[in-house]
Length: 525
Image (cartoon, rainbow, N blue to C red; front, top):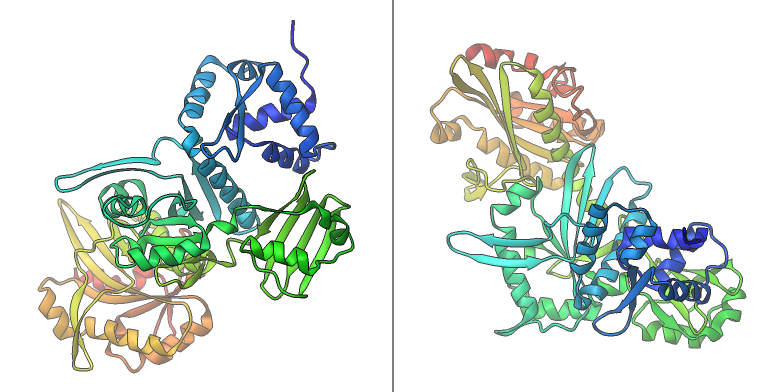
C-alpha cells in the first residue's frame, strides 16, 4: 500500500536528496524560499520528527554536538523512486562525510549559497562543489620522485566566462580548533601539503588557470595569528583568507523583536552584536521588516554591511549578508583586502584573448598558435624570464604573455611570429615604464642575442577601451617597437572576430585583419 506523503514532506525529501545532510534551520529556510507557508523551525521540527518516526529520515550529530544533521534512509530514497544504483551512490556519498567533517560541510554549504547569490545576476558562471557532491577530485594524492602528499579539500570554487576558466579556489574551512605551527602544527602540515600540490604537474592536468588559490576560511582574529606564525611559508602567495564570520550566523536575545519591528536598534542590542565580533555603527543603520515579528533586514551604511535577522522561538538568528563578488572579503598574506571582481577583471582580457585565438586558429588550415599567459597553465614559460637592460639596470623580465604563430609546411613546422603580450586596462604612469621593457625586448640587438632564426618578433597590446588605445598609439611614437606593435580591444577578443575582422590597429591608426597585417611576415617565411 503506497504511503501518504504531503507536498511539504516531499519537498523536504527532495531537498535532503540534493543536499545530503541538512539541519532543521536549513530545511526551514529552503521551504520558506520555496514559497511554503507554516515553515517556522518549530513546525519543521515537528514534521521532521514525524518523518524520523516513520523511518524515512534519520539524524547524526556533528562532532562537536552543535548541530544535528538530517539525512535520508534507504526507505526515504525508495519513496523518491530512486533506482538501486542511485540509492547506492547516494549512500556512498553520505558515508563519505564523517561526523568530524559535518560542521565543516555545513559551513561550506553556507559559503556556496552566499557565493551563488552574489553571482546570480553577474556575467560569470560559478561552479562549486563540496564533500557530498564532488566527483572524487577533492581528495588528492601527489606522488613524484621527490615529494608526496595527501590532502582533502572541503570544497572548490570555479569561475568561468564565455566557456573559459578564469579563477579556481580550493576551499579549506578552519573553525579554530587546529594547532597552527610547531613540529606537529596541523595548519602548517596542511600548508606543506598544499605547497607540494599547487606546485606539482597535477595542477596542469586539472586546471587551465594559474595560480590555483586556497580559500582559507577561518575566524578573523586567527588570520593575523596565522600570518604572524606562517607568513614566510612558501604556500602563502597561493592563500586567500576569508573571515569565518562572513558565513557563520550568530544569536541574539529574542526580546529585541519589538524594537526591530519599530525599526530601532538600541544600545544593548548593539553590544550583543559586537560581542559576536560583528560590526555595527552607533546610529547609521536602517531596519526593514520583511515579516512582522519574524524577519528583518539591517543595513549599516557606515560599515557597508547588511544583516538578515530571523526569530527562531528561543532567540533571534542573525547572518551577515555580503556581496562576495563586489565587496572586499578576501585577504592575502600581507593582510591586504581584495575583491573577487577585481581579480576576475585583471585576468579576463588576456584569458579572453588566449581562448579566442586558440579556438579561431582551428579554421586556419595551415597555421597553429600557442598562447601562454601569466594566468594560465602550465605556469613555466620556456622563453621567460629573460634578462634585459633598461636605464643602465639589468633585470629578469617577463611579459604578461606570449603568442607564437607557426605554419605547417609539408613535414615541417616553422615559427613565423613571436609576440610579447601587454595588457593595458587603463593608461597610467607605470604604463610608460612597462612599455620600456617591451621596447628593450624587441630591440634588434637583444633579438640577435636570443635567436638567429628568421622569426619575426612583435608586440600585441590588449586594451580595455578606445581612449586607452588612443593613448597607447600616441605613446608608441616614442618607441622603436612602434612598427612591431598591433593593438586590439578587449571586446574584440572573440572567436568570430579576432582573426576574421579588421580589429587590429597599428600605431598609425590603420585597422587591419590579423593575417593581412602579417602577410609580409608569411611571405618572408
